Length: 238
Length: 215
Image (cartoon, rainbow over all chains, first blue to last red; front, side):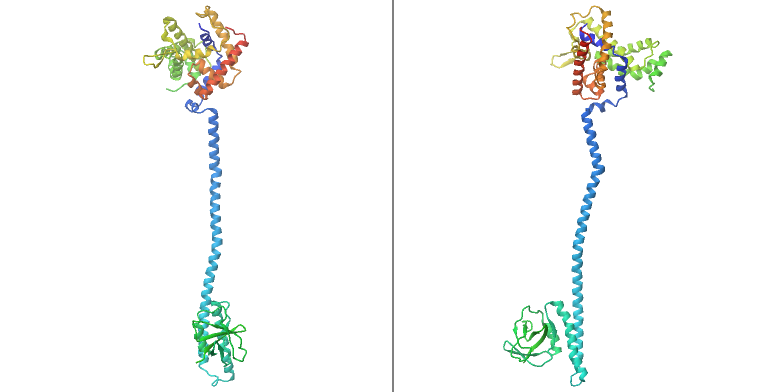
């Protein structure tokens, strides 16, 4: 008998408990197909990876999406907060502008009607009180026109009527104060109000002398005289 | 057929009921055939060994009352298979009992007893001392007694190593499973099984030397 065969025989006499331990594991263990596939380090690595995936899936992944959602929500909120006031402001300005324009137009109409009413009376026919009212009404109408003026240009002075009858000279031409009914139409025709004065009045001998004059190509038969913040319309004297 | 617990099957043996054989075959037939095939690599011889196992069990129980039928029956099958292989080899003394040979086309042809021979080759390095004399040991009775003592010493050594290595050793050298099958049964990779078995063999050799086994 060879030594190795002798060894095989000796192993045949192994203690019963050792054999039972091995055979119990053989019969009660997991299916060997499952155990033979991976070594222990590989199984540990696979379990660790599975646990990591589960943790990521159960904890981090929803947080990631929540964060993304929050970011998107914040951005949307910021966009709304940024854009909404601007839009509201724009809308408000538009509405206010439209309202002012409407109000100005109505006031202008009112001023026109008032002027027409006044026009129905003459200073000669009316009494001293009514004559005083005649002077006062154009002032109100001018105040009403101021609203329209402001809505068009904030820098435009207030429109008023020159109470006197003297004429003024500007660029060699003579101008007379406009009547109220003339002023209304002239003012409507005045589409643009120049930013800088075109020159100054001269040769009047009154307080109008040296006042700034605004001329416009839109209305060549009229000038605006600015005196102490008030505008007076004068027409070319025929 | 329902699988009975070991105790119930043993009771059938004690009651001398032939269903004991049927239940044994039903529960352990494939396992015993696997052990025989590991040694003999021959289905007819293995089936014959398994049938002989049932007869041996019938004769042994009673009076014996095994705690675990699988190890009891497996040991019988293992010894019967090894004895059968040795008898066949001794009778024929032919080169066809080599582990393998090549056919005319160069293909490796596995021969009878291949699994047994592979285990044998690996175990040879465990034994300290010079090789056995040509023709083997002369005193067969003395051999058997020594083998039993050596088996106890090996058992002592196996208790000093890990359960994983211990189980692997038993699957490979007691049940004579292939390396791949042993690794699968122990739940380790084939490479790790090979490493563990090598260390176990080296450790066993050192242990046997320390215990005075110098064959």
